[in-house]
Length: 100
Image (tube, rainbow, N blue to C red):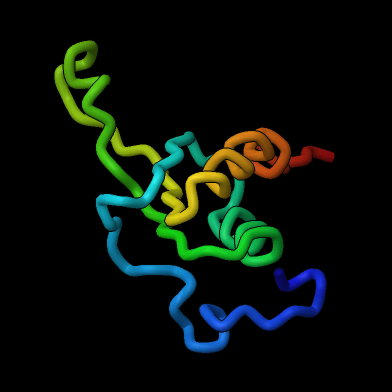
């Protein structure tokens, strides 16, 4: 993990974030309220395995609104990291817009 000063070989070789969604990755879908960089930075700092971040189509809205809806998804190679991310998601995915 980055915050403990340990070098992750996947980070060193640029293999941590994959470009496509492999079928064996465990997905976590959510509505993005903050910047994508905030989510990705938290993953790099607190988790160790490979992940994918992008948008997927939610077929649940097809029956209700007669169209597909895109939602954000983070998928993890290690299933326990998907659980950890799901538990902390409401703390890091906040709308930080402040009006003065």
